[in-house]
Length: 94
Image (cartoon, rainbow, N blue to C red; front, side, top):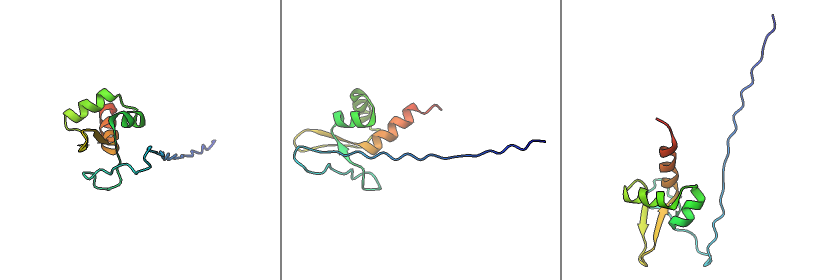
């Protein structure tokens, strides 16, 4: 009898992004996330980073599915961590 041997491998992938602003300031952090290290970006930048259409981001904001904040100057920033979590929930089959 021939014995077969199985090998199982696990691959873990970590992604890092460098976000640079013209002013050199750091992006705002999400105050609603428990980890305290989730960054807030404008919807257009968050869409590029998370591979989600900008229109979907605004739908998620309207349904209160992601963390967001309106800045004093009227601009909008969204939490990238909550956006990715919402995206994953939308793409995961039930």
